[in-house]
Image (cartoon, rainbow, N blue to C red; front, side, top):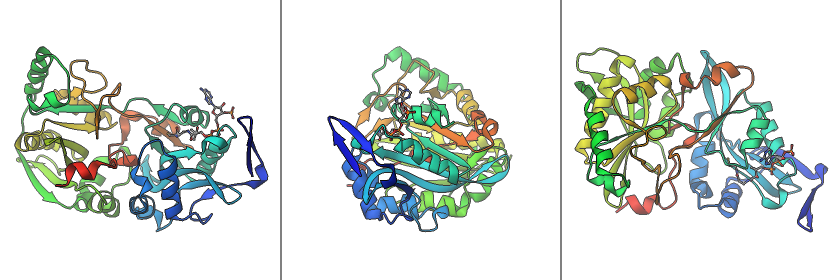
Length: 379
Ligand SMILES: CC(C)(COP(=O)(O)OP(=O)(O)OC[C@H]1O[C@@H](n2cnc3c(N)ncnc32)[C@H](O)[C@@H]1OP(=O)(O)O)[C@@H](O)C(=O)NCCC(=O)NCCS
């Protein structure tokens, strides 16, 4: 029973149940309605079909919704979206969960429900990860032993210096210098074969072997990219023309903002020998499509070094050009990237080695449609 008087809430412990939505009989429709009613902004998890794709159709979900909910009697008072996943750490497959969109109803806050939801998750998984952490949630995560990465590295390459003016307010001198830095990169011949994302399993397993990462096997890649309910991702296998390595997997998503194309490099993995060729391909694609820029977000130290070496700009560290990260509508937040929290049951040192962690926009559903996205991109 939840009661409130003089702004103070009191919790009858015996009335509180915490568990998964499927175990406690909270339907997908109810959960979508809860998100729709209580999240601060309109959110695609408020649509049952999107929620079912994200929570129930992921390969490790086995058709069930593993989101954690809190019931006060029969009233739903809290929910945290959970997508079970396989996480590879130190070469071992671990039982993991990607966390998203956590709400405790305002009248039930400050009663320990949030902390109990985290404890429930920690009892049931070996690895937990979430992105876009709010100021309200951060103390709970830190208190529960999570590690916080405030700024996920993000890099961009400007490919149309006229169109970029739609997104940035920067001096001509800063753009000229950015152009000069980008031109210092080494262009490599490439061969790119369009394919289904599910066909990039080999590039993923070879390239990610030594890194901590959410597994990307056929089922994962197919679910995440080939069967996305909103976005049309484009997948490519890219090799150097001299066949230096075993190839890289590239996942692109083109977006249009006010008629101007922009390109997101959503995922990149594979043989490091082909990395320069893969990025030469991506930069050429952005130019061919007249995209204003191409951007990438990810944690891996090797990829970070690659983007820096190719003269891409860091959205976190380089002060010359501030490129927004939100486009529906265009909004500049400082810094224009996101945060993540990570927790491991007994492999903290390995997991918290962020340079050896491969998290990209595809993980934790960082590349998620906003509700008016369809209106902007569909004719
Ligand atoms: C974040 C949220 C889920 C927390 O749920 P909750 O049930 O109120 O959290 P709890 O009652 O379990 O715990 C709150 C704890 O945070 C602590 N806390 C709050 N602000 C703090 C601060 N600035 N520094 C340190 N601790 C702080 C409280 O003291 C309390 O700990 P205590 O019980 O040991 O005193 C809830 O506030 C919420 O829904 N917020 C809006 C949506 C949101 O931000 N979601 C998270 C997206 S990542």
